[in-house]
Image 1 (tube, rainbow, N blue to C red):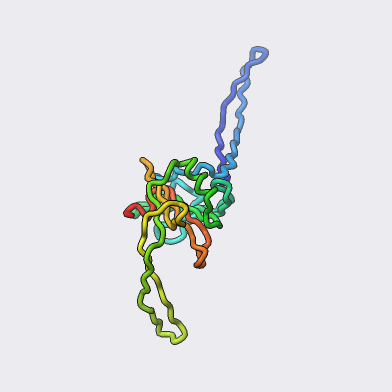
Image 2: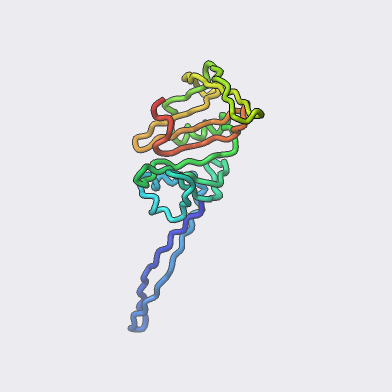
Length: 190
């Protein structure tokens, strides 16, 4: 995400007995390879983030070209409550995180509070659409606490002012990304 901070400074110079006032416009461009997630959005009203575009109810997006711990992503998702207050910021990286990425997160945020892997698999009832060509089976999994070597699907850090939740894709299904959430996530009840 490229953020511009524009500030006008008034500079008064004196020479040869005259005061000359020069206004300078200073533009600071932060090429925020967001090694620092925009946590400042959390707790603010969505109207204070003019670049945010409405996606669906309670979700806004910001197109970006950024990185988190050297993994690129191209969109930020801002989640709001019913009053429009931003309660979390998330993005996807196009990898299923590996040990190296995990250790980078631990270095940055400390040891996680919880990790969960898929446990026992339960076959759900087949769903049938009115269309004779559609039939799908679904599965449900119990969650079991684990360590990183046991291939977690959820990693959670509980920080004093926000949580960090990592939802890791699975090589055995079509979700080959990792979602990282800062703020009030979806897993706090685990």
